[in-house]
Image 1 (cartoon, rainbow, N blue to C red):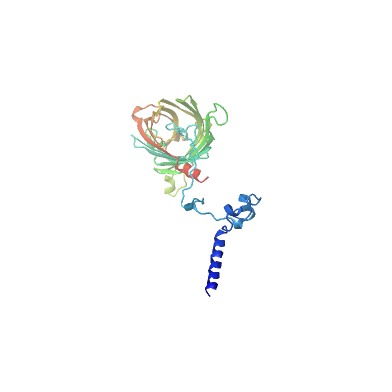
Image 2: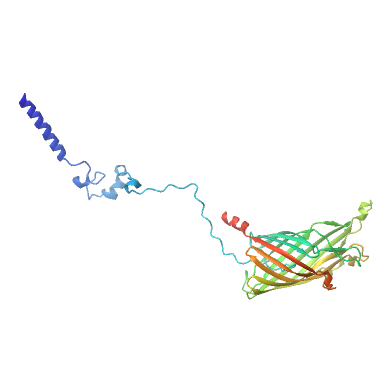
Amino acid sequence: MKQANGVILATVLATGAIARAQPVPNDPATTGNDAGGNPAGSPTSGATGAVANPGSAAPDPGPLLGGATDAPADPYAPKPHHPQADRKPINFPEVLTTPTGWLLPAGVLYSNSAIDTGGGVSSDNRVGLGDVAEFGVATTDQVRARATADDKAERIQPYVTASFRLGVAEDRLFQSQPGITLGFRKSFERNHDGEKTRIAELTLVASKHLGDRVALHVGGALWDASLQSNAAVSEGQPPPPEVTLHGHGFNNQVRVFGGFEARPLPKSEILIDLGWSPEFCYQCAADTDKIRLRPELSWGVRYEVASFMHIESGVRVPDIGNFNLLDAQIFGQITFTSFALQSAVESLK
């Protein structure tokens, strides 16, 4: 019995020793095979072996053991912003009261509000369309009327107009090309003191910078207007015939206007312009006297408070034909420009 136990014990010890002496399976350091079980140096060993036998490749140990893992995507990460284009200073669509040959850039909003010592209030709001056009709605205080030829002309306000202009920017087609715009402005029908009036203006103007500090504006306007009394209608009678400016001949409709700008300081400009405004005479006997165009002279300054805000102030003489300084008005106006709409459109690209 003791002899049998000794044989069993010797067999167990010998088996354990043999098992301990055997190398670990698939160990490249002891068997000469790679991690995929292929002989070292064979065409399928290393990276080639991983391609030939992808199922036997060891898994990525993860970042804690030095492995590389893909960073998870952030669903709330902000979208990349488009870089803003270089924005040059805006060339204004008006000098003081007359249009220029410059258009607002695409998507730029423009708002001008003015008041003068005669109680006149006006507002002008526009938007640039594609760098080639401009649309706006305004209230003007330049339209005047008088009951008889001996009465003093008074403003008709608010007088609401809509405008559309299109053109070509300066230097766009060729070197030294002036900015050119073709504009049309038309009023809504206005009833005032029992009289119905309308105005319309077609303009063509060219503007050119002479260096960095001076600009000139020259243009022509084709005016039209109408006047009709509503007094007979209220009494049950047919209305009198409508009097129009185009019915008095082409020479009474065409006028030349212009303006001048000088920049003596980086943020300050001196402005001068000569324009025209319609005047109605309700009870004048001759039809040619019922609608007339009066020359208007303005001069003043524009100061840049910020890139989005400018302040203008100056003097306006409503009828330089008489040059009655008692009728001259001192005015002040503030202009805001905004690139908000342009930035919103650019962010969608």
